[in-house]
Length: 335
Image (tube, rainbow, N blue to C red; front, side):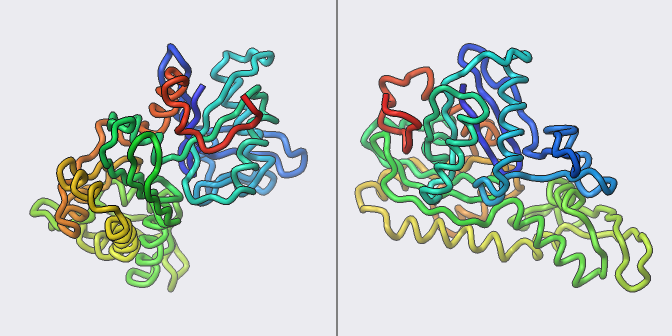
């Protein structure tokens, strides 16, 4: 089975069945007994709404494991749920991880998966998996550029011949966009909002590039007013939100430009020819493809199903494990 262990969502692919599970990476546990109460969607609804004895946690931050025990509980739960509660299975697992992580963080992902009951764990860099999942010809000697914008990390990579030629990983992605909306609401409107509200605003009216339609989009935001300390509703316009997200977006664009500067000329020629592929949940932000192509002058395509690119890639690798043997970046045991 293939797992895309993301900061925001975890997806699981089982050979022969396709994507069987897509849940938020959130676990709610009892603070005293350390027992899990809910995992996934159910736990996400508890974020910021928990009583004193329950904590809703996100075990992953910036694409890597921040809370080992909780991550293990979550993986165990997902593996068991996929196998309909059969606790005796020990599957072979391919996990996608960000390209810029350290050896210790890789080890943590492997250990968590083995503790959760995997018999053999392989790691694959997320940009490579996303490119395979988006249908780019990674095995051919042509340059392909992929930008994978997830919840915790943005991966920019140039791939050729099943491997990464140049990659850059910045820890600015969907979560940072939410944070910048929260900060903006606090500064400009004196309104304190939670992470989930910020996420909803971003999905509803967030955009990266000005269009005619978004000038008059408005959304009502409910939160706590700082001055009076009472709940309030404020109306916000599309351009305001775009303005608030411009800083993290410019960091992402800079990472793309830096990667293009370091690309060998032959591959750069291929990229101009084929364009850049945009994957990950961040690709769903309106106008982001326009912004990147405006800044770089290269055509940008958004993948067909940006959210599930990485997990589809891990699944394809599992099914063609012989041909795509060189794409792995780590093994749990010698094969």
